[in-house]
Length: 345
Length: 88
Image 1 (cartoon, rainbow over the protein chains, first blue to last red):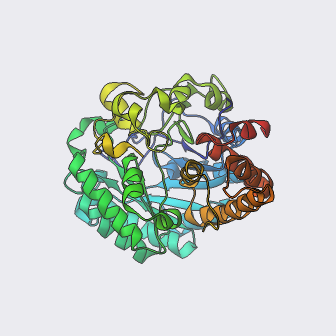
Image 2 (image 1 turned 90 degrees about the vertical axis):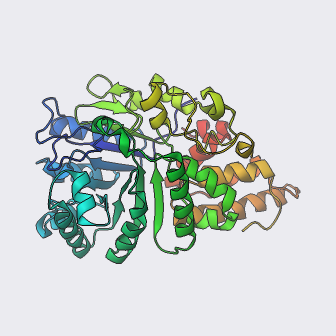
Image 3 (image 1 turned 135 degrees about the vertical axis):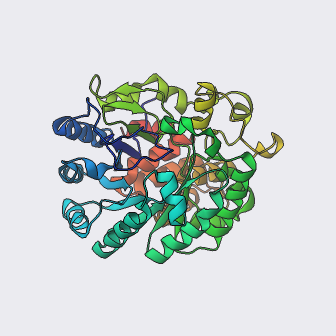
């Protein structure tokens, strides 16, 4: 069977970043990777992503605004018909940068915010004063009329701040809050203590569901925590599920993949098993033929509890976390909190 | 939303297929598929909407720009895999 087109692809345009985040999956530093795709290569890749049938591209990094040709890449992405959004830390978005983004055709921004206060955010982002800079960036984005979402990372002991972050996001006019569950990959491998416990995850999911049910405008999504959908289906009336909730994961290799600044293709930014290299093979070929993607698309290959689960085609377990722990793409997700009985549909 | 019975398994798979869509897109898509699927079921004298009705609805009533994506989403959940392949 021919692969379905990806819904979205993220392209980490550069490794260079002005921050030193503890959880950085792409191990970003203060200089570009020596083999970073040049402008022509990056444009060729963007064209191939469109050719593969993708609808949306996320330009991220590193910090994408560190890349000198970023506005050119946004324009190119627009010209090949991709809905173009950017994942940024927001600190470099002056009024002038916001205006340039609008002129280049950016359609939305995702701005990272990892705490509800200065102390928490700055400590996690590794640089003092980032909170203030990020807030200024958000204000400039708002003034420029660019739709934006706020993207916090949940971590052990601090996850409860997400509610306060979501309140602020709403106050600032964000359209969505996309919550990432911390996965210890990349630089995050050095900080396994930030990973939430199963109990914390479950408590978060319950809070998340309650919040979304009470919300008519803001959309919440969560990444790297696919069990949330099982909880949604089990606890939310069908009409509310259909009108309010979004199943945002796990799409690794099925509806989504990620390309790094030097051309490596991964199923997901936090599932770092190489599926190909766009310098050696076209993105279209990698998307359609990569063995890694074939394995991830066939949920009947899942093992243990995940393999026996009736929700395997809509949840499938957090493949990223399983892979980080075991090196297997198909092993069971031992962080699943449901009993086998509960996983019968 | 539904005005007549749907095959239970088909309805579940349809919900799974559209669950990743943004809510406003999903509501529009669902309304279109339900209305057309039920019309096609009635036209062939069935009291229950079956897979063939949904596939016909997706192939004929989904806007051209998003048709393949809809068929792929349904195929991912095991609905009308052949239909998704034919159009590629």
